Image (cartoon, rainbow, N blue to C red; front, side, top):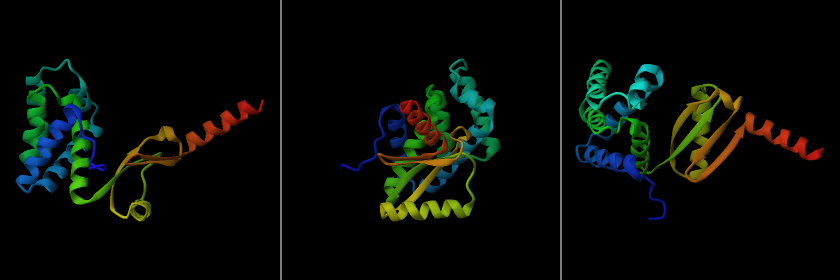
Length: 185
């Protein structure tokens, strides 16, 4: 199919295996929620982020530390087994890409479009709902948002939806003005 999600490489293979297992066990929502919680933990902890990304830690060290973190966070079941297997196989550095690929497969399964939105500061619930509604109108599908906060864009937002990208960030607009002024000289 032309609109099949692109999930390839190591992350795609692991994500596909997890997706198929979760689908067969009717645990897609539980796995998605646990993976989102794990990702939030990594985002909120520099030490956990270092554990996930740093190849200096042995597989055993990563596995033991991760087991403790997952237990404390209440992440169990298929998602915990998956993350521990990833650590055991020395692929923990690719966990974020695996989670992203899993979300892509899940959105496809649900008939949703998935949009990556980058903003300078967190959006209110009202603004998120308005953005979802606007994107749903454009795609004629339910839209799931992955929102990232990046103060470097200064203001506005960047939206990636499939192969399309709209960059309405203040940083890009200022760079365009700067370039136009250089050309005018």
